[in-house]
Image (cartoon, rainbow, N blue to C red):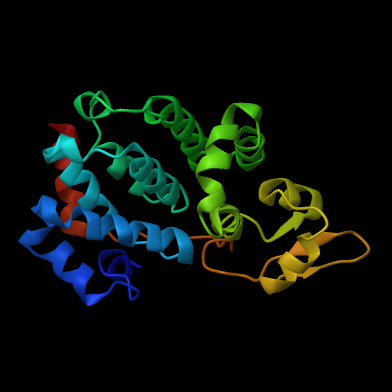
Amino acid sequence: MTSEWLSPPTRSEIIENLVSGVDRYNPANVSILEDYLYHQLRTGEYDCLANLAILKLYQFNSELYNPDVIINILIKALTTCPLPDFNLCLSLLDERLINTPLEEPDPLPVILPELKTLHNLLYRCRFPAFWDAYRSDELEQLRDNYTVEIVGFENAIRAVAIRAVRTTFTKISSDRLGSYLSLSDDLVQYVKSLGWSIDPSTTVISLPPNPDNQIEATVVQESIKLPQLTKIIAHARS
């Protein structure tokens, strides 16, 4: 997992050289990294370090600032929750960057609080609330101008919910899982694609066992030798 985060197998040699070497701080390379970001949006790939390199270049060179690029980076980072990618991206933003003069109205100050809210809901595993907020009228601009261009965005969010369900449940009702995934008619097919089984009479979904969803009693035994016990008693008396 860590190795794929540091160097995704889909990263090209050109991007690898930019991200790993001193050229990552060369502002002349920002267009290459931005093109790579839009490649990620079109293909569903993800490269956090390359996207962080863009934000670092913006931080050092405010004239490069592009709010649309930042919004897309943050949206991609949402899909990795509960990993710290979203907060890592936020750490490279500051008021000086957001207040950079632009020829057109800057969408970032409006959309950034909305993205923070969505991230908070995902991090707290409040998946039904996430879908309600995401599909609300207030986030119409986010959907119409950004996430609609990101291939597989909603399925990537569902993958976040599935990771949480796998580590928590051995059985879950169809209604509950459907609310987590914002699926109804397609839920049965989606569940089957995961290799999970569903009882047609009760609509209860059974998850395969894994190290995280199995409850096992743990017995802890401590061994104290006589010389150690003698020291403890002597210390207590004193």
